[in-house]
Image (cartoon, rainbow, N blue to C red; front, side, top):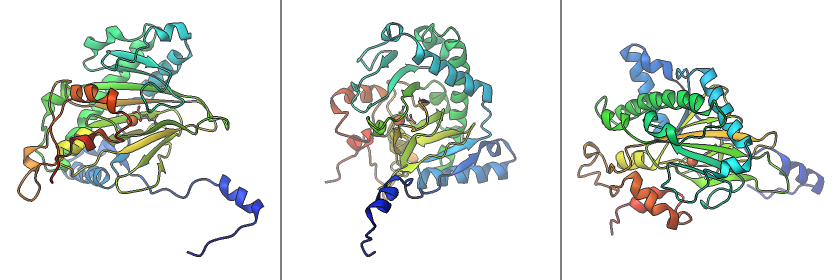
Amino acid sequence: MPPCFLPASMASQVAQLPPPPSRPLPVINLARLRKDPATRALAIQDIARACREQGCFQVVNHGVNKSVMKGALEAASEFFELSPEYKELFASDDIRRPIRYDTSSRDGISKARSFLKHYANPLEDWEQYWPMHPPSYRKKMGEYTVEIQRVSMQLMDAILQGLGLRPLYMQEKLEKGVQFLALNNYPQFSHRGDEVGLAAHSDYGFLTVLLQSSPGLEVMPHGDDAWTAVPFIPGALHVHIGDHLEVLSNGQLKSLVHRAVLNPDEARISIASIHGLSVDEKVGCAEELVDEKNPEMYRESSFQDFLDFLPSNINNYKRFVESLKIDKA
Ligand SMILES: O=C(O)CCC(=O)C(=O)O
Ligand SMILES: [Fe+2]
Protein backbone atom coordinates (compact mmCIF):
# COMPACT_ATOMS: atom_id res chain seq x y z
CA MET A 1 0.00 0.00 0.00
CA PRO A 2 1.37 3.48 -0.85
CA PRO A 3 2.04 5.68 2.18
CA CYS A 4 -0.93 7.88 2.93
CA PHE A 5 -0.44 11.55 3.75
CA LEU A 6 -3.25 13.33 5.54
CA PRO A 7 -3.56 16.97 6.60
CA ALA A 8 -2.81 17.36 10.32
CA SER A 9 -6.48 18.07 11.13
CA MET A 10 -7.60 14.79 9.54
CA ALA A 11 -4.71 12.84 10.99
CA SER A 12 -5.87 13.74 14.50
CA GLN A 13 -9.38 12.55 13.59
CA VAL A 14 -7.91 9.25 12.41
CA ALA A 15 -6.12 8.84 15.73
CA GLN A 16 -9.49 9.02 17.49
CA LEU A 17 -11.20 6.49 15.24
CA PRO A 18 -12.09 3.18 16.83
CA PRO A 19 -9.63 0.34 16.22
CA PRO A 20 -9.88 -1.53 12.87
CA PRO A 21 -12.71 -4.06 12.59
CA SER A 22 -11.79 -7.04 14.66
CA ARG A 23 -12.31 -10.62 13.59
CA PRO A 24 -15.77 -11.96 14.43
CA LEU A 25 -15.84 -14.13 17.52
CA PRO A 26 -18.24 -17.08 17.74
CA VAL A 27 -21.40 -17.05 19.85
CA ILE A 28 -22.69 -20.50 20.77
CA ASN A 29 -26.24 -21.35 21.81
CA LEU A 30 -25.54 -23.77 24.64
CA ALA A 31 -29.16 -25.00 24.76
CA ARG A 32 -28.24 -27.07 21.66
CA LEU A 33 -26.07 -29.30 23.85
CA ARG A 34 -29.19 -30.39 25.71
CA LYS A 35 -31.23 -31.21 22.58
CA ASP A 36 -31.41 -34.39 20.44
CA PRO A 37 -28.11 -36.21 19.63
CA ALA A 38 -27.80 -34.71 16.11
CA THR A 39 -28.24 -31.12 17.37
CA ARG A 40 -25.83 -31.81 20.22
CA ALA A 41 -23.24 -33.22 17.79
CA LEU A 42 -23.46 -30.04 15.68
CA ALA A 43 -23.07 -27.85 18.78
CA ILE A 44 -19.97 -29.87 19.78
CA GLN A 45 -18.58 -29.31 16.27
CA ASP A 46 -19.14 -25.56 16.57
CA ILE A 47 -17.44 -25.48 19.99
CA ALA A 48 -14.53 -27.54 18.63
CA ARG A 49 -14.08 -25.12 15.71
CA ALA A 50 -14.24 -22.06 17.98
CA CYS A 51 -11.64 -23.62 20.31
CA ARG A 52 -9.26 -24.47 17.46
CA GLU A 53 -9.65 -21.28 15.44
CA GLN A 54 -10.12 -18.60 18.09
CA GLY A 55 -9.42 -20.16 21.48
CA CYS A 56 -12.57 -18.48 22.77
CA PHE A 57 -16.30 -18.02 22.24
CA GLN A 58 -19.29 -16.59 24.03
CA VAL A 59 -22.20 -18.70 25.22
CA VAL A 60 -25.89 -17.75 25.36
CA ASN A 61 -28.79 -19.87 26.66
CA HIS A 62 -26.32 -21.35 29.15
CA GLY A 63 -29.00 -21.78 31.80
CA VAL A 64 -27.53 -19.38 34.39
CA ASN A 65 -30.31 -17.16 35.61
CA LYS A 66 -29.91 -13.45 34.79
CA SER A 67 -30.66 -12.55 38.41
CA VAL A 68 -27.84 -14.85 39.60
CA MET A 69 -25.36 -13.13 37.24
CA LYS A 70 -26.61 -9.71 38.31
CA GLY A 71 -26.32 -10.75 41.97
CA ALA A 72 -22.68 -11.82 41.54
CA LEU A 73 -21.75 -8.53 39.84
CA GLU A 74 -23.56 -6.59 42.58
CA ALA A 75 -21.82 -8.53 45.36
CA ALA A 76 -18.43 -7.93 43.73
CA SER A 77 -19.07 -4.25 43.16
CA GLU A 78 -20.35 -3.78 46.75
CA PHE A 79 -17.25 -5.51 48.09
CA PHE A 80 -14.96 -3.12 46.19
CA GLU A 81 -16.94 -0.16 47.56
CA LEU A 82 -16.26 -1.17 51.17
CA SER A 83 -13.73 0.69 53.31
CA PRO A 84 -10.05 0.13 52.52
CA GLU A 85 -9.58 -1.14 56.12
CA TYR A 86 -12.03 -3.98 55.56
CA LYS A 87 -10.56 -4.98 52.19
CA GLU A 88 -7.05 -4.87 53.63
CA LEU A 89 -8.05 -7.77 55.91
CA PHE A 90 -7.73 -9.94 52.82
CA ALA A 91 -4.57 -8.31 51.47
CA SER A 92 -1.61 -10.57 50.92
CA ASP A 93 1.06 -11.13 48.36
CA ASP A 94 1.17 -14.85 49.16
CA ILE A 95 -0.55 -16.37 46.15
CA ARG A 96 -1.09 -19.68 48.01
CA ARG A 97 -3.63 -18.10 50.37
CA PRO A 98 -7.27 -19.27 49.97
CA ILE A 99 -8.36 -15.65 49.55
CA ARG A 100 -6.38 -12.61 48.48
CA TYR A 101 -7.12 -8.97 47.83
CA ASP A 102 -4.73 -6.56 46.14
CA THR A 103 -4.72 -3.11 44.67
CA SER A 104 -1.18 -2.76 43.45
CA SER A 105 0.90 -4.24 40.69
CA ARG A 106 2.46 -6.74 43.07
CA ASP A 107 1.36 -9.58 40.80
CA GLY A 108 3.28 -8.03 37.93
CA ILE A 109 0.46 -7.81 35.40
CA SER A 110 -2.15 -5.61 37.09
CA LYS A 111 -2.01 -1.97 36.21
CA ALA A 112 -5.07 -0.07 37.34
CA ARG A 113 -7.11 -2.94 38.72
CA SER A 114 -7.83 -4.08 42.23
CA PHE A 115 -8.91 -7.67 42.70
CA LEU A 116 -10.21 -10.29 45.07
CA LYS A 117 -9.29 -13.90 44.34
CA HIS A 118 -10.57 -16.97 46.10
CA TYR A 119 -11.40 -20.63 45.56
CA ALA A 120 -15.00 -21.78 45.17
CA ASN A 121 -15.40 -25.54 44.52
CA PRO A 122 -16.55 -27.32 46.60
CA LEU A 123 -18.39 -24.43 48.18
CA GLU A 124 -18.50 -25.96 51.67
CA ASP A 125 -14.67 -26.03 51.81
CA TRP A 126 -14.07 -22.44 50.73
CA GLU A 127 -17.06 -20.29 51.67
CA GLN A 128 -15.71 -19.90 55.22
CA TYR A 129 -12.82 -17.79 53.85
CA TRP A 130 -15.06 -15.48 51.82
CA PRO A 131 -15.90 -11.92 52.90
CA MET A 132 -18.77 -11.47 55.40
CA HIS A 133 -19.45 -8.06 53.83
CA PRO A 134 -21.49 -7.11 51.97
CA PRO A 135 -23.83 -9.40 53.96
CA SER A 136 -25.21 -10.94 50.75
CA TYR A 137 -21.73 -11.77 49.37
CA ARG A 138 -21.62 -15.46 50.32
CA LYS A 139 -25.17 -16.20 49.16
CA LYS A 140 -24.93 -14.36 45.84
CA MET A 141 -21.42 -15.47 44.95
CA GLY A 142 -22.20 -19.02 46.14
CA GLU A 143 -25.21 -19.29 43.80
CA TYR A 144 -23.18 -17.93 40.92
CA THR A 145 -20.16 -20.20 41.40
CA VAL A 146 -22.29 -23.36 41.66
CA GLU A 147 -24.04 -22.45 38.40
CA ILE A 148 -20.78 -21.64 36.63
CA GLN A 149 -19.18 -24.88 37.83
CA ARG A 150 -22.14 -26.70 36.24
CA VAL A 151 -21.71 -24.80 32.94
CA SER A 152 -17.97 -25.50 32.96
CA MET A 153 -18.65 -29.25 33.31
CA GLN A 154 -20.92 -29.15 30.24
CA LEU A 155 -18.36 -27.14 28.30
CA MET A 156 -15.46 -29.41 29.24
CA ASP A 157 -17.44 -32.48 28.21
CA ALA A 158 -18.22 -30.89 24.82
CA ILE A 159 -14.64 -29.65 24.29
CA LEU A 160 -13.10 -33.01 25.20
CA GLN A 161 -15.53 -34.84 22.88
CA GLY A 162 -14.61 -32.29 20.20
CA LEU A 163 -11.02 -33.49 20.63
CA GLY A 164 -12.19 -37.05 20.00
CA LEU A 165 -12.01 -38.13 23.65
CA ARG A 166 -14.78 -40.30 25.09
CA PRO A 167 -17.88 -38.73 26.70
CA LEU A 168 -17.41 -37.88 30.39
CA TYR A 169 -13.61 -38.12 30.06
CA MET A 170 -12.07 -37.13 33.45
CA GLN A 171 -15.53 -36.14 34.69
CA GLU A 172 -14.96 -37.22 38.30
CA LYS A 173 -11.65 -35.38 38.54
CA LEU A 174 -13.18 -32.29 37.00
CA GLU A 175 -16.10 -32.34 39.43
CA LYS A 176 -13.66 -32.33 42.34
CA GLY A 177 -11.36 -29.89 40.57
CA VAL A 178 -10.34 -26.32 41.28
CA GLN A 179 -12.68 -23.43 40.63
CA PHE A 180 -10.72 -20.26 41.21
CA LEU A 181 -12.52 -16.93 41.12
CA ALA A 182 -10.90 -13.61 40.19
CA LEU A 183 -13.10 -10.58 40.81
CA ASN A 184 -11.57 -7.63 38.98
CA ASN A 185 -12.36 -3.99 39.60
CA TYR A 186 -11.19 -1.43 37.02
CA PRO A 187 -11.59 2.34 37.19
CA GLN A 188 -13.05 4.29 34.27
CA PHE A 189 -10.38 5.24 31.73
CA SER A 190 -8.89 8.65 32.37
CA HIS A 191 -6.65 10.37 29.82
CA ARG A 192 -3.99 10.85 32.49
CA GLY A 193 -3.57 7.14 33.23
CA ASP A 194 -2.99 3.74 31.72
CA GLU A 195 -5.27 2.44 29.01
CA VAL A 196 -4.65 -1.17 29.99
CA GLY A 197 -6.05 -2.43 33.31
CA LEU A 198 -4.62 -5.94 33.15
CA ALA A 199 -1.70 -6.79 30.87
CA ALA A 200 -1.58 -9.60 28.31
CA HIS A 201 -1.54 -13.11 29.80
CA SER A 202 -3.11 -16.53 29.44
CA ASP A 203 -4.98 -18.20 32.29
CA TYR A 204 -3.93 -21.34 34.02
CA GLY A 205 -6.31 -24.30 34.29
CA PHE A 206 -8.43 -25.76 31.51
CA LEU A 207 -11.09 -23.17 30.99
CA THR A 208 -12.06 -19.66 32.07
CA VAL A 209 -15.69 -18.54 32.15
CA LEU A 210 -15.91 -14.77 32.38
CA LEU A 211 -18.75 -12.37 33.16
CA GLN A 212 -18.20 -8.67 32.51
CA SER A 213 -20.30 -5.69 33.59
CA SER A 214 -19.32 -3.69 30.46
CA PRO A 215 -16.89 -3.99 27.52
CA GLY A 216 -13.14 -4.09 28.13
CA LEU A 217 -11.91 -7.63 27.45
CA GLU A 218 -9.60 -8.01 24.45
CA VAL A 219 -8.23 -11.24 22.99
CA MET A 220 -5.42 -12.20 20.66
CA PRO A 221 -6.23 -15.58 19.10
CA HIS A 222 -3.14 -17.73 18.46
CA GLY A 223 -1.31 -16.61 15.32
CA ASP A 224 -2.87 -13.10 15.32
CA ASP A 225 -0.79 -10.05 16.02
CA ALA A 226 -3.64 -7.66 16.79
CA TRP A 227 -6.12 -7.34 19.61
CA THR A 228 -9.79 -8.11 19.07
CA ALA A 229 -12.35 -6.52 21.40
CA VAL A 230 -14.81 -9.05 22.79
CA PRO A 231 -18.29 -7.70 21.94
CA PHE A 232 -20.44 -7.05 24.98
CA ILE A 233 -23.55 -9.24 24.76
CA PRO A 234 -25.80 -8.72 27.79
CA GLY A 235 -26.44 -12.05 29.53
CA ALA A 236 -23.68 -13.91 27.64
CA LEU A 237 -20.65 -15.56 29.24
CA HIS A 238 -17.24 -15.45 27.60
CA VAL A 239 -15.23 -18.71 27.58
CA HIS A 240 -11.56 -19.20 26.78
CA ILE A 241 -8.93 -21.92 26.72
CA GLY A 242 -6.32 -22.08 29.49
CA ASP A 243 -2.77 -23.45 29.54
CA HIS A 244 -3.73 -26.87 30.89
CA LEU A 245 -6.14 -27.53 28.03
CA GLU A 246 -3.31 -26.79 25.60
CA VAL A 247 -1.26 -29.43 27.45
CA LEU A 248 -4.08 -32.00 27.67
CA SER A 249 -4.87 -31.55 23.95
CA ASN A 250 -1.17 -32.01 23.16
CA GLY A 251 -1.11 -28.63 21.41
CA GLN A 252 -4.27 -29.11 19.30
CA LEU A 253 -5.78 -26.20 21.26
CA LYS A 254 -3.83 -23.12 22.32
CA SER A 255 -4.35 -21.09 25.46
CA LEU A 256 -5.74 -17.65 24.70
CA VAL A 257 -3.74 -14.47 25.32
CA HIS A 258 -6.06 -11.77 26.62
CA ARG A 259 -6.02 -8.45 28.48
CA ALA A 260 -8.43 -5.89 29.90
CA VAL A 261 -8.52 -2.29 28.73
CA LEU A 262 -10.18 0.45 30.74
CA ASN A 263 -13.64 1.46 29.64
CA PRO A 264 -13.92 5.17 28.71
CA ASP A 265 -17.57 5.32 29.81
CA GLU A 266 -17.63 3.63 33.21
CA ALA A 267 -15.80 1.69 35.88
CA ARG A 268 -15.89 -2.02 35.15
CA ILE A 269 -16.18 -5.29 37.07
CA SER A 270 -15.33 -8.71 35.68
CA ILE A 271 -15.60 -12.11 37.31
CA ALA A 272 -13.28 -14.76 35.89
CA SER A 273 -13.94 -18.34 36.98
CA ILE A 274 -10.95 -20.58 36.26
CA HIS A 275 -11.54 -24.34 36.16
CA GLY A 276 -8.95 -27.09 36.41
CA LEU A 277 -8.03 -30.28 38.20
CA SER A 278 -7.35 -30.23 41.95
CA VAL A 279 -4.28 -28.41 43.17
CA ASP A 280 -1.88 -31.38 43.33
CA GLU A 281 -3.22 -33.33 40.36
CA LYS A 282 -0.72 -33.46 37.47
CA VAL A 283 -1.99 -32.71 33.95
CA GLY A 284 -0.10 -34.12 31.00
CA CYS A 285 -0.92 -34.70 27.33
CA ALA A 286 -3.88 -37.10 26.95
CA GLU A 287 -2.37 -40.43 25.87
CA GLU A 288 -5.16 -40.80 23.28
CA LEU A 289 -3.77 -37.68 21.54
CA VAL A 290 -0.14 -38.80 21.48
CA ASP A 291 1.22 -41.04 18.72
CA GLU A 292 4.24 -41.33 16.45
CA LYS A 293 3.11 -38.42 14.29
CA ASN A 294 2.14 -36.34 17.32
CA PRO A 295 4.74 -36.87 20.04
CA GLU A 296 4.16 -35.49 23.51
CA MET A 297 4.74 -31.72 23.36
CA TYR A 298 4.50 -30.70 27.05
CA ARG A 299 5.77 -31.80 30.45
CA GLU A 300 3.12 -32.55 33.06
CA SER A 301 2.39 -30.04 35.81
CA SER A 302 -0.14 -29.27 38.52
CA PHE A 303 -1.89 -26.10 39.67
CA GLN A 304 0.52 -26.17 42.64
CA ASP A 305 3.50 -26.21 40.24
CA PHE A 306 2.07 -23.09 38.63
CA LEU A 307 1.65 -21.36 42.02
CA ASP A 308 5.28 -22.21 42.88
CA PHE A 309 6.55 -21.04 39.51
CA LEU A 310 4.58 -17.81 39.22
CA PRO A 311 6.12 -15.42 41.78
CA SER A 312 9.59 -15.42 40.25
CA ASN A 313 8.57 -15.79 36.60
CA ILE A 314 5.55 -13.56 36.10
CA ASN A 315 7.31 -11.27 33.65
CA ASN A 316 9.12 -14.01 31.73
CA TYR A 317 6.11 -15.67 30.14
CA LYS A 318 2.87 -14.34 28.71
CA ARG A 319 1.76 -17.96 28.68
CA PHE A 320 2.94 -20.28 31.47
CA VAL A 321 2.50 -23.18 29.05
CA GLU A 322 5.60 -22.02 27.12
CA SER A 323 7.67 -23.12 30.11
CA LEU A 324 6.22 -26.64 29.85
CA LYS A 325 7.20 -27.27 26.21
CA ILE A 326 9.45 -30.26 25.73
CA ASP A 327 12.66 -29.17 24.07
CA LYS A 328 12.92 -31.20 20.85
CA ALA A 329 16.56 -30.26 20.23
O1 LIG B 1 -11.25 -8.25 33.24
C1 LIG B 1 -11.19 -9.01 32.29
O2 LIG B 1 -11.97 -8.94 31.34
C2 LIG B 1 -10.11 -10.06 32.24
C3 LIG B 1 -9.81 -10.68 33.58
C4 LIG B 1 -8.76 -11.73 33.50
O3 LIG B 1 -8.19 -11.95 32.48
C5 LIG B 1 -8.39 -12.54 34.67
O4 LIG B 1 -8.92 -12.29 35.78
O5 LIG B 1 -7.57 -13.47 34.50
FE1 LIG C 1 -7.13 -13.83 32.56
